[in-house]
Image (cartoon, rainbow, N blue to C red; front, side, top):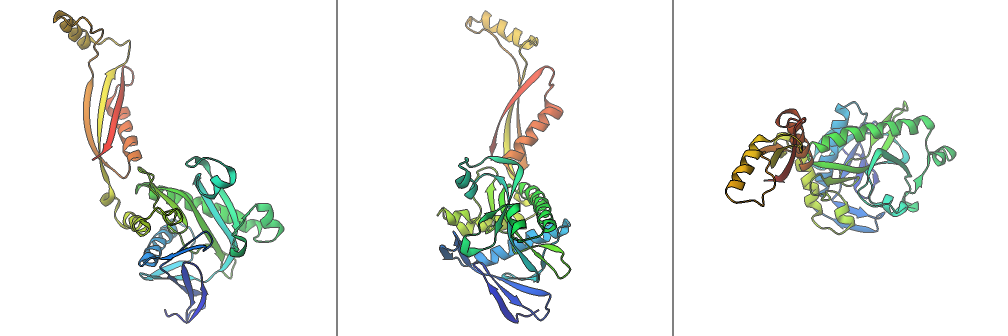
Length: 324
């Protein structure tokens, strides 16, 4: 498949016509932009990472039954896609409050949004891609009601698939932007890209930003963050497990007779330690385990306690957990 003619050049990619009128070639550039291209930079290798990451996500969605424009990866910087008529709307799904949402509404960052918040923005660079309501969309015919419903339905399915997939790899999907297009029969497909350029990714344990926010906020290590995302999604899950140690303390509940504790207390008193008022004998366990994240390790340790290690009728427990 050959490039015939440049159709469009955007901030992050070029789109080429091919010798098949139903297909196009995306070429991902090494450019970085933010704030509607008011801030710009170029980083060698960024286009490759964006291309590979987006292709991986789009292929995953297709395998899960989500229609996307992705056809195949051509090389490190190019992918073959279906040619679509793009609907002039961006759909943003938010799982956690951050970015423009906090600025607009004055809410604090990091709030979990349950259910996820779905927003529509008009694709118009000159206007700064303004937020629009479904009433705006209907009144100005930006999209039909069935198209809006389908885009929302697909966006929430994408959110569910990607959130679970990334969680297993120690990444929180904070929010993301999707674009959609239609073919000649009117079928709707997920279009454009899904990458650190269009999503916010936070490390589950450290909350470190692994996306374009590193560029927006001058946090540095932008390319390293993209590399980290690519590393985690390109490796088998077993290869990205972290190792944790749980120090587990199990002890009898107050009011439960502790005969061992009574014996130890009596012995201490006989050895002239009258200041000791009570002794309760417990168990100390040290457990090492593999897990993709601190949160997942914590969940597993709690399940171990509830399923096997602790008699919930008479015992309580506490634990300390650290990565090793």
